[in-house]
Figure 1 (cartoon, one colour):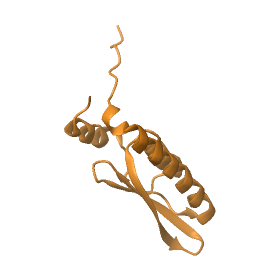
Figure 2 (cartoon, helix red, strand yellow):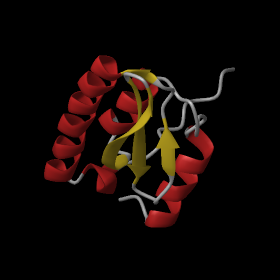
Figure 3 (cartoon, one colour):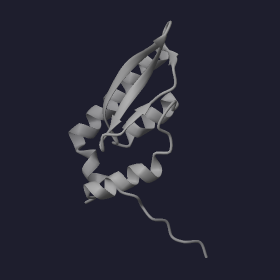
Length: 102
């Protein structure tokens, strides 16, 4: 079982984008059980961005995209968040260390 401090270290080390991230990156964070909440923010005419809150409270923002793209990604992200909650995914997070090459 992974402790909260280990999870925060994992997020700090492996979440490489914080602002203007791709929608695919945002979906991947949710898929891996790191996201707890997602919302949208208007960027201007027919453009929005996703603001994703991670399990440690970090907020990640996506790049501004057409609202149709953002709405589709938001649906995907919310499905992943639901699965993660249902399966308590944050309790199972961890990094598998590879065997050093010889």
